[in-house]
Image 1 (cartoon, helix red, strand yellow):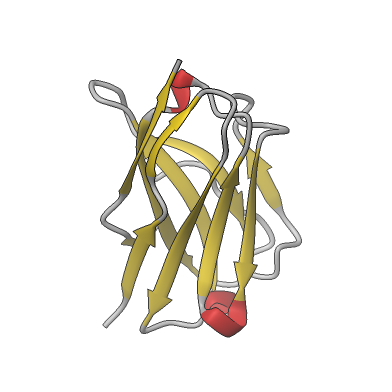
Image 2 (image 1 turned 180 degrees about the horizontal axis):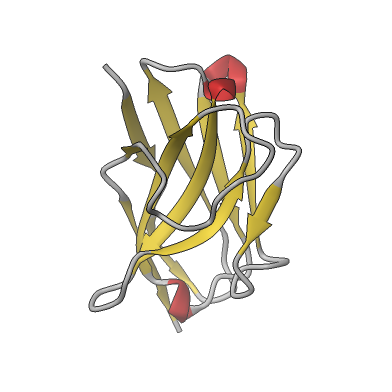
Length: 126
């Protein structure tokens, strides 16, 4: 049974940093493409970063370019989202997701993803 568990969310002041973790069980990270998404109240779920299975392809939303990075530790079966220079508009529930297949590309939209975590809340105050 596949399970994704996010952690590391919390409250931080603008300009601060957080690192989110997504620990996977029931699958091998390098058999999947990965994405980080967020959803603020009243808004649609937004793709912010993605990587393909061997991290040869990445994509990021303009809103997080230069501030957020995605990394992966296969030994720990964990995906990370490092968030720097946080802004109040980054406040949202953050989700990781896995997409089956060793593809040459990654997808920064939620539709194709097969497995999702439960989310972790990030709140940035001004």
